Image 1 (tube, rainbow, N blue to C red):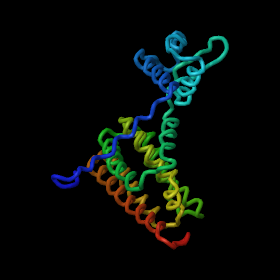
Image 2: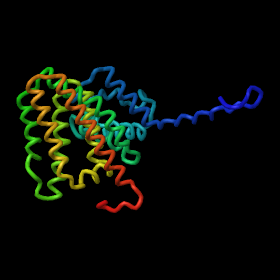
Image 3: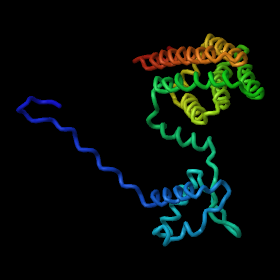
Length: 264
């Protein structure tokens, strides 16, 4: 509150009016709720009576738009011809993550925001892998990603590919988590790092020491997971995230300096 005891009080501006939702969006939500409440499973047909004009109190055009929304979201699939109709679909994780990534195309998060999440999620994933153990096939997949950047790169293009392989290591580790939310959040953060322009530019900058740093952390982490050392796995991953964040922030700040050249 501003002003004195007898003067006028500056009131906050009134809230912006809520954006009115379009009728097709509302119909799509109603159908989605019905599917969830009825516990329909992927592959099962959406009952035709649910989609009747009179049941939804919607025109055929509005219903068509609503069905397109649900199909775009990956929740239903439509088939034509004999035995056709609308059927429940399982939403693919890659499809859902792609839509979430699109949310940030024009307003990406900061590098600091991404690493704030990574510093919480990824040490927990590493600790779980050490505590519960992971399948031998999963351990071999982690080792395979490490082998992609064991050798010195022969070109700038290969070095960039090795940077992306380091992100693949974290994706493979996220797949081992029994907590699907942890995994999905980790995948989202890794996708943003791959797609954001500033991150791509940083990854494309030559830095021979960065490969050795990544190897150092990931080899130590694999040993901690194999030894079922929960505290070590958590600490190694947290240390890795802190150092990676510092590197990315420093490089981003260098690129943002006025008058900086492409190789400066």
